Structures are given as C-alpha cells and as structure tokens.
Image (cartoon, rainbow, N blue to C red; front, side):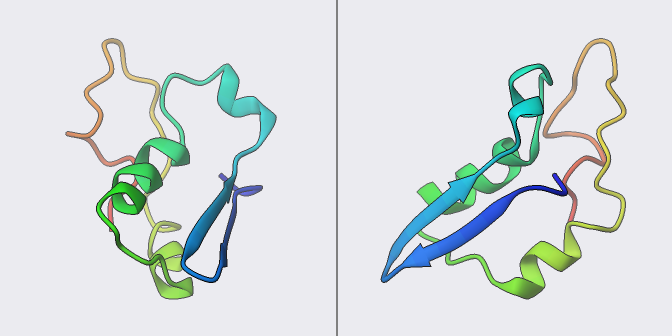
Amino acid sequence: GNMTLVAYLGDVPILGVPGAAISMPTTIFDVLLPQIYAGDRLTHEDLIRLGDGGLCRLCKPCHFPNCTFGRY
C-alpha cells in the first residue's frame, strides 16, 4: 500500500490503510497486523523490504499467505 501509515505513540502502534483496502481481498493490512499482534515493532527497514515483490496478483482462489504478496 503506497498510502499506508505506520506510526507509534509510545508503544502503541497506529496503522492507517487507504480506502481501496475495502475493495481488495488481501492488503498490506493483512501483512502488518499479524506482526503487530505478535508484539513486533515495525521499523522503516521492514517497510522498505516489503517494496520488493510485494504486489498482490489477485489469484483465483487466493493463496495468501502462501504467495509472493508481502514477502520480506
């Protein structure tokens, strides 16, 4: 998501996803949320690594997370 927002208020993560996330079956939110739930603190470098090969191919049926979408 080129309009994704990741910020922290102290230790509290704040995520913002673009409105198009409503119409897509799998988004960057699906990649980031499990890491947030696991207690990982996302870094600038983590988000940069998601830029390589991170496009959803809109496969029918969807195989996420067993696909190239959101790979580090």
